[in-house]
Length: 289
Image 1: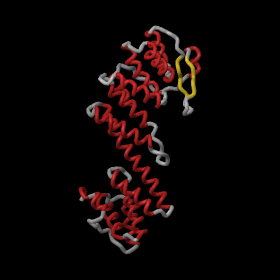
Image 2: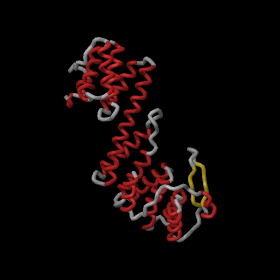
Image 3: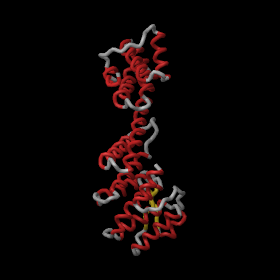
Image 4: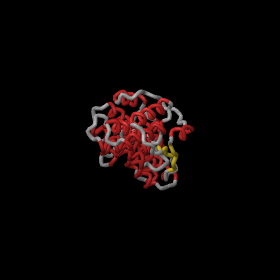
């Protein structure tokens, strides 16, 4: 992330700064208020004091140089609020999004990015606005034991960036993040599938493991999904499906520990891995045989 952000800053002629702590003690001195939002986040809101655009912009840059990202974001918002039709307002809107991102205020970063995209769709820095929006969603992805709505939103935003600007430096980073996001979604399916398997809900577990094989086949979770399918099908007495799952696992991941486990499950039952070409598993991997 850091390397791509540096490129973005160079593109925008922004100086590079590391993440630093936010010093809210200067709020009063800067004429800035603190208001609570519905989500219990805290947002800095600049009190309206009419000032020349140059002064507002200078105040914002001064806060960036001190690492006060949240305050800087509010100051850049003031540029757009007090001087909405100036050329500085367009630049300030994107700077606001970046500052909120640096302050981990992701919803505010997304808001400012969306505003920039809607108001300036032809601007040369729009790819960066799409990128800021996407990474703000990406960095809110929860662990696999929680709802994955943010993960799906991040996936959509990353794909949107790639589709619109496939040759940008941001798209290259987005492709990597999509791979990681898909792996995360597969991990969620595996976690739920394991839970069902432990609870004796074997059919429900199979649905989850099947989804990994069908939808997330290129992720790191596929070998385990095939082993779990071997176990689940044996439990249900569906021997042919169990043999196929193990055989496909062995063919595509011959040295993988999950194949060793699947093979042991079959041999303990005096069964060998054999592919049933009519099985959905063999069809899912047909291009790999």
